[in-house]
Structures are given as structure tokens and as C-alpha cells.
Image 1 (cartoon, rainbow, N blue to C red):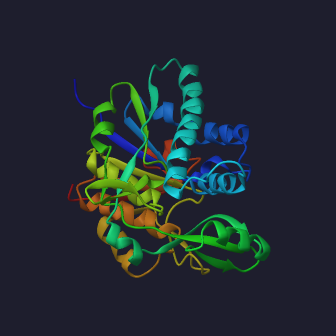
Image 2: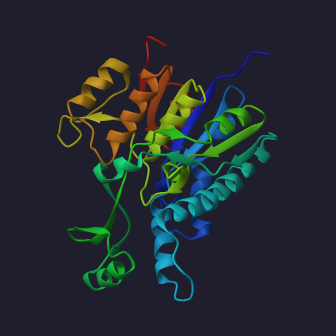
Image 3: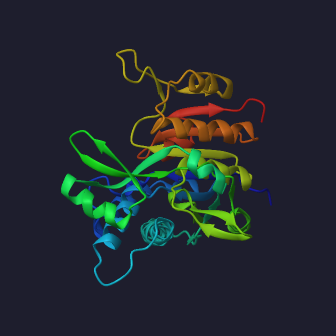
Length: 314
């Protein structure tokens, strides 16, 4: 029997909170909407799902900081916590879609760690996460995290900044590769993975967050995926995004998208990591990468929407 191609589909954490609400029922409804096309592509593809956790890990930090009778979790434990809770959300929503058309595939959440270089944390870019604090709330936040850095965002408040180091390896990649295609749909790299580094010969959690797209692209390479898809809330990757000459890139080569990336066309905190993840995936042998709207997965996989990036050397 001929092996089917594998596709890694990366969902943003905001895909589950499109109405701005973080209660379970609202997130389940949003997850159902985001995953509705997955069963339609299963006949031709082996699917792996990855996801962000920005809003959810922020909420987790708030819950732990608000607790009076228990010790708050460190950030890396909150990432693990949200991997489990979001994985359950995705499993629940996806199983409902699968049952409607009689498919027997089972979603399986894999708690995933991303290896980072401990020495790189101090040099890593700082990423804002979690709740916006007022000036008064900031005093309490600083007591809980005295060594942490906060940044003021005009009109919103203060936000916690944490390192976002490069993922070097997805430690559970072999496990994901072994279960994909056996009527299983792995859900992995939640929130980019739990950041761990080797400290005195042991893997230890780090107070950091990993970019979801960079980790997802790394996983896609490690399991030998054919296609990597990053879903977002716009149609795809644009050039001249902030000007009247804004243009959606439809079908581009690896060389072309790399050139635009090096020219600084893609914002560092939003589209930049998605494009970089696609470039790295293709450079390491992937056949196709796609950036598309999360409501258009089926047409994006068919090559009819989003930014389609081809590796002509693959």
C-alpha cells in the first residue's frame, strides 16, 4: 500500500478565542469551526495538528497569580498545562466532526518539549505574553516576578516580557512520527512546546516561550512531512502590507519568499515567524508550505487559497 503524504497544520492560539472569550464552551465552539475541514482532507493526507497558546497561557498565569492558597506554577508548567487543556479541546471538537461522517481516526495529544540552548536565553528576543496590567496591578505582578521585565503598551497597559529562544529539537518528534498514519491524528507542539534546556546533565524547564510556527516547522521537518500549513486570521502573506500597494502573495517560489523576508517585508512579531518557518521547512526538503486563512483550510490544501510556496528543488 502506497504511503500517503503527511501534512502538518499549525493553528494559532487565537483560533480558539475568536470572540475574545476564554470560557471552555466558547473555545470549544471556536475549535469546532477551526477544525471543520480536517475530516475532508483525511482521505488523502495523514494529518498532524499543532497549535499556539498565547491567550490561554496568559489566562493560566492570571489564575495562578490570583490563587491565595496554592503556589503559582512557573511559566513552563503553565505551557504544559495549556497543552493538555487545548489538546482536550481539539480532541473533543475534532471527534465530533469525525463521527458525523463515520471516520474512525482518533486525535491523540502528545505533550511536547522543545529543546533550547540555555545560554541563548539572555540573547533571545523578548516576547510579550499574558494579561495587560494597570499601573496599580503592576506592583503586585512585580512582587510575584521580581526579576521579570514588563513593557508599557500605549492605551493597554503593562505586559510581561519573556525570552523566546530558537527551538533546536522537538524531543517527542519520533513519537509523533510513529503514531501518524495509524488512524491517529497527533496534536503536538502546543504553544511551541515546553521549553527545556540541559542543566547539569538534566532536562530542566525554562522561563520562556517558543514560537509556535518555528516549532511546528521543525516538527514537520523531523517527521518527514510533505506539506506545512500555517493558518492565521488573514488571507496569507502580503508585501507592502502597511501601504496602499499591499499585495497578497499567491504562488511563489522558495527563492522569492526568502528574498522578501530578507528585505524585511514581514513583521517580526506576526507574519515574520510564519514565513521563516516555511522557509526553513522548504530548505530542509519539504515540498510545499502554505500560509492561509484558518477558515479556508480545504481550499488552501488544494492550492486554491492562501500563499502557496513551492520548493522546486524538492
